[in-house]
Amino acid sequence: SACRIMTKLYYHPHSSAAASFIAAVAAGVHIEVEQIDFATKATTSGADFFAINPKGNVPALVLDDGTVLNEGSAVLQYIADQAPGTVAPENGTTQRYILQNVLNYLASEVASTLNVLCSEAELVDKEALKVKFVSKFEYVEKNILHTHQYLVDNKFSVADAYLYILLRAVPYVGVDLSAYPGLTAFSATVGALPAVVEAHAKMNADASST
Image 1 (tube, helix red, strand yellow):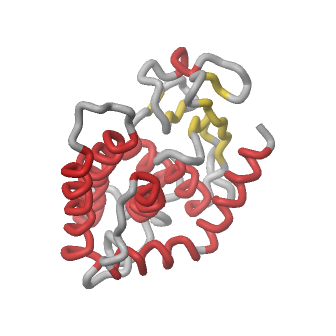
Image 2: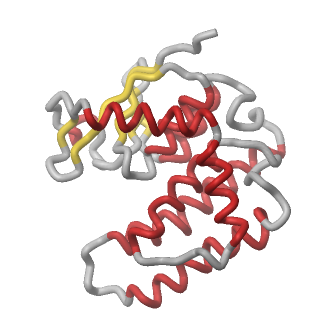
Image 3: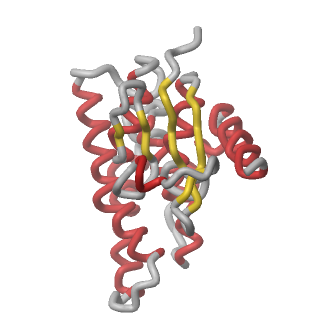
């Protein structure tokens, strides 16, 4: 059964917002999407993205009533809750709080460090930061993936979509995680999921049509 249509997800396929796209496909939530151009901050249709989301970041989810969610953790959970039980534990359960715990860690510790490594800033000792960056992944490997295939309740959730997309960005900042078999196996497992394969195909088609 088709879930309700949300107004629109603004994203870019080569950003962490791709996790929200994957989440929607995995949850079976039919969602209108539009890409943004990072260089011009315009949407595919030519709209000024800052007028839609003053922060200028993706993902940005505009709900039917005009509400804008522009933090990945909130967007991922909103999408999950349109199809309860598919890609997130039920609200109010301990597992849901564990999901929020993991999402917050990925956003505040992993993604924030990645953003600095991706920036043009010369003020940062990037080699030292890379060591710190690896330690953030090492924590996930040793404390979760060492014994579990997925991050929460040992089944695929929006947290896995987020980590998967973050891991895809790692080679582009000159970091090697090959010493961590749990992370390597995780990327292969999630990347092979039918919903993730489908999401990549849709994002690629969306990108080539813009």
